[in-house]
Image 1 (spheres, rainbow, N blue to C red):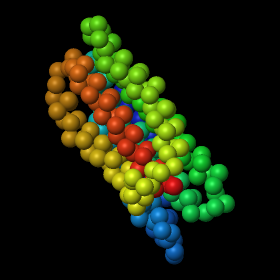
Image 2: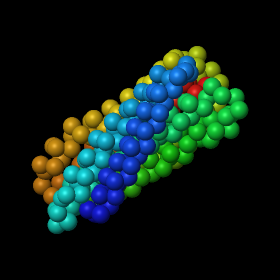
Image 3: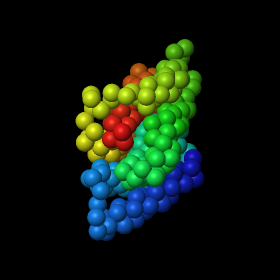
Image 4: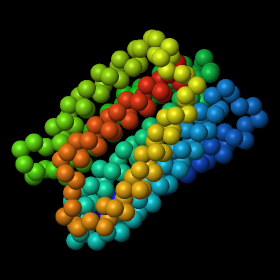
Length: 234
């Protein structure tokens, strides 16, 4: 487990470096497009969130393997959402850069698919696997059963969002900076809750109701992110 969390920490550090380099290059451009505010906020929030999550994973890798039990599983579930949203935000920022160039319409299409469909589905799936590790032996009802329902439901919701022709009539397209704040907010929340979890006994695990609530909150966060992203990329 220590090796896994250490690798996660290193990966977050590498991705944070890419986000920082991309932001520095972008801000040095002589002429910035209309989407410059959303792009810069997305890159900066992705960088900040990845730095936070990298530190959290590094601290988690320092736990002895003798105590890396349910408490570690709980931490992995908590850190999964900001880690996944940070990766989505990097894809989102790249897609925003291309949206004003008609010749890059193909890239925009792939970017929308990654931002709205593929990466969020993988994220929700990984969160549900973490939920299974937490509550694998907890009674008859297990929160990952709800997780499977949300995972199956999400691609349907994502397809509806992508084909919602009147989306911009309900969502302000200028809110393109908000998705980045959602990712950063989840990282800050994880950083705030992390010290509380680290002081619990090694066998500590979230109650099934809390796990189900976190999975539901993650689903709502991802759907909200997708709606705002598609509106900004329209």
